[in-house]
Image (cartoon, rainbow, N blue to C red; front, side, top):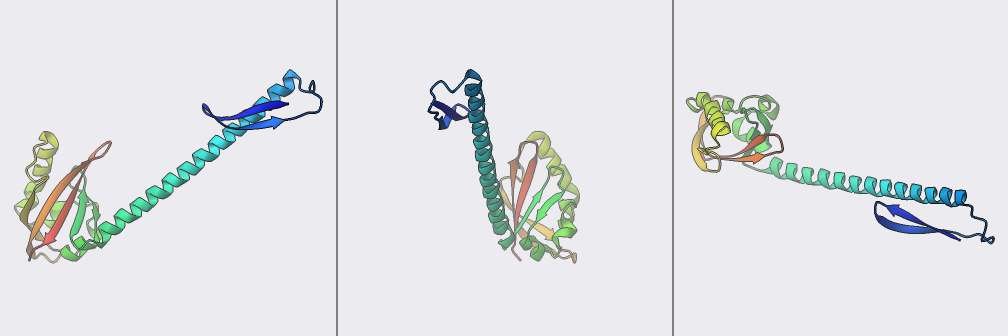
Length: 180
């Protein structure tokens, strides 16, 4: 009888028992071959578990992403994300409703297109100053400002900006409420 451990990393996940009526039947070569089979089974099991955990992680990530997208898309308020230079990365349905632009018209453009003067021309300087100094003049604070719709009309709004540090960059989330 030969008992072969099935190992996944340092863990023994199971045993395979090979029995022969002839106790001298297992040569060292046969024991080596059976040991290799046990190790191979361990690798297969490890790969199967890794694949299963990757699938579960991917499914959980997909569900989390869908849940967050659903929350953002169904918000009545405008939720806009911009990159470090002020380009719009996302523009939810609330923003479309408030500003009159379709997301496709705004994503990739500088967020200052939604602002009248003087904020329109000063915005990039504010963003650059924060990127350089880290001093918060708008980030983390709510304030009342004026926005500009697609048709050019100006309107009052409440605005709050938060910053999220990702592994390699920052993004800004802007939440806007029309207070007309």
